[in-house]
Amino acid sequence: MFLYRLTIFLLFPVLVTIIFFRKLVKKEHATRYKEKFSKSHFNIQRKKNTRLLWFHAASVGEVRSIYPIVNELNKNYKNLEFLVTTVTLSSSKLVENEFRIFKNLQHRFLPLDVGFLIKNFLKLWKPSNIFLIDSEIWPNLIYNARILKIPVTLLNARITQKTFKRWNKIPKLANQIFGSLNMCLSSNLETKNFLLKLKAKNVLHTGNIKLASPINFKKIDKDNEKKLRSKEIWCAISTHEGEENICLNVHKIIKKKTEIVTLIAPRHIDRSQKIRRLCEKLNLKSQIVSQNEQISENVEIIIINSFGVLPSYLKHARSVFVGKSLIEKLQNDSGQSPIEAAKSGCKIYHGPFISNFKDIYDILEHHGISTKIMNTKELADNLIKDFALIGRSSNKHISLMNVLEKKTLNDTMKNLNILLKNENI
Image (cartoon, rainbow, N blue to C red; front, side, top):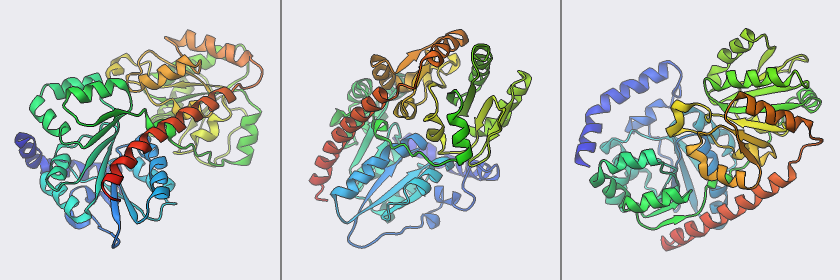
């Protein structure tokens, strides 16, 4: 622990320089980037006679997953405030846009995990409880919280085999960090076993809270809605480099059989122009569509270029391919969430590499909602069969997801209520 603290302290100037560089290339917030490294920019805003619950969620999926929990806590307790910290710019925008209904909630960027910064952050904000989401393990944060006697819960805990092996190489630090956590609610059984081996306490398996993430069907242009309803559509979502080329070739195979539109929503929308150039090489008519932009009549490939609108397109799709699952070099950190597509009533296809969401895919496959494909031909063959069906069989999928959502949220809240009542909130 001493070596970690010393190393991070010595790296502090380098880390600040990296943040400045990221700000120049517009990967950091234009005005609030200093929250990550300057005490004077923490912007503490606290009300009297309230208890602050701090949730730290790194990315968009984790942020969306805590929404129902914040909502339930607001219903069940009085005099609460919420602090949500994130790392990425996109996740900060999500908090600002979708959590605005909570008047007692504020967003800040997480400070660098440097001892003096974290210590000051904790002393100034004075949280009564800290909830780290998924795999957000920050040693200095956990170390200082223990010294200040602030309970820390690892919520929706997710430890992959790769991550476990890394922690296992530094057992003393691992045991010290994980042993300092007050409670761990795991998203899957594999994580529960890993946490127990790492000497974590109060480890319970409650399921993946991303199942309870709300879907926001934002309204899109009326003419676009009409056009989408009149076409046969399938989607490729959360795609990574290499997968779009596969999906475009799938489109070419299917269009020999039936007239279709392929919608591509890349994991990183800054790759939209690159995907369009791929379409041009394959002589496919494509369009990059931002929010409320008119869809062309003769377009074959629609490339989504905005956040938060995907569910509005998924509701028109019969089938979905979920990316980061066909790239072998990513197999140790593979798979993107299929939950949004499943909740939208779509049939789901994925490649063999799904380590990050294996537990979710196991459930979906068991109920006939998802199917593994290995290559372009298998995906095309399955989609052709789907398009041959009459109607869009979505009710079964949506009903199952509603049951899973309710159970996961209930199990999670049951344990959080026990924790918070013991803290006399």
